[in-house]
Amino acid sequence: MIHPAPMRAARGVSLIEVMVAVLIFSLGLLGLALMQLKGATFTKESGARTMAILEARSLADRMQANLTALSEYVSASSSGTIPAFTACSPTCSPTTVADNDVAEWLTQIKANAPAATTGGGYGKVTANADGSYTITVSWNGLITPGAGNGTGTSNVTESMVFIPDLGS
Image (cartoon, rainbow, N blue to C red):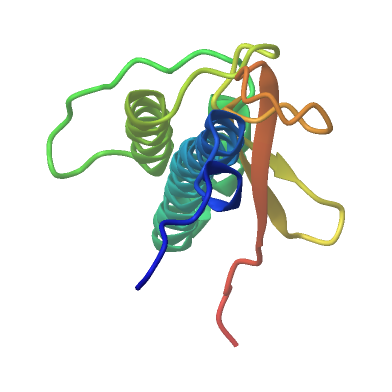
């Protein structure tokens, strides 16, 4: 005959053990949610950086097609404002083409990237002493460097150097 075990010998899960398990599980879920949020922020920042590189390359292609007015790309982009677009016939001057290229370029950047918090501009072309040109795109980043808080108060720039192919 089997005798039932006394109450002291019965084992089970206490309320404290269940609460500790729920706490650990909750912390794990919060960690996963934070990783998801950070991942989305980094993905958006990566998209903005990709857009900046594509826009800089787009202007470099336009500059290569209009080599006679390279200095106009520098002056048109240095004002910090978007130049007025000038409608013209198929026989536009190279200077007008350069102004229109910069206007379209800056308008495209402005439409696709958050504004830079300082400096007022979205993009700029500068001439270098060696005959090359630096094309810089600026926007308001989502991640403040060093803070890791994603407040979106940092300026981010992406630059590329354009070396015109003047022929041989």
